[in-house]
Image (cartoon, rainbow, N blue to C red; front, side):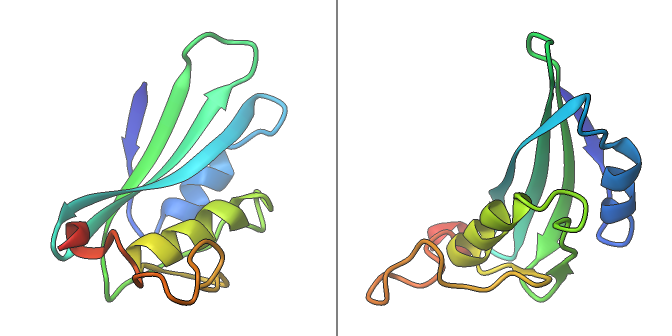
Length: 115
């Protein structure tokens, strides 16, 4: 797997320059708790017709920051974006809360490493 570190200021442009829908499939947007204040957001792609050729862009995000949406590049990313909002409480542009969690569920159960 190739890992590419980015920043909130450049991630959208980095993905836009990289992504060719004829070559790469968008797998998912993932969140990994780093510490109580920081979540690593990962955009993961797989190359079509290749075995184990994966590229992951990542950015470390504080709860107070907003992640840019990539739905204008990859419309199906909205599902993964909304999952990150629900589970981690991370703000992502144009992504509403309330896709995965029931009304009586614990709000943002993975925020701050679930502490």
